[in-house]
Image: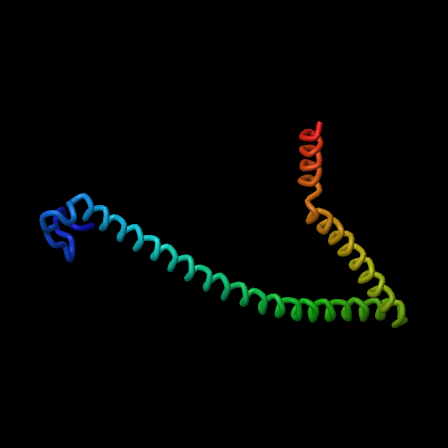
Length: 137
């Protein structure tokens, strides 16, 4: 904050040109422009940071998928080997793991169907339809 009466580059207004109120208005306008430029610079910096973080999240998501698939395959193999040890038949172990995986796929598809239905915004569409009917009536 500047001390009262000391503004940089302030020249006394010659008679008949700018009044002190216009000079104050000009400084206020310049300060508002400076604040807007600073806000815009902050938004640009935030957007660059968000873009960088979004790209990092994409790559980390790929890494997580590959590591998760590896862990899932190792777990499935261990379960199949355990069932083989118990039953003595390798096909029973493979079939048990395959059936469990198919059950998991069915559960995931059911959950995805539920999410896709929510993405169609059924409550909002219903509310808009009711509002249209009230307007038409």
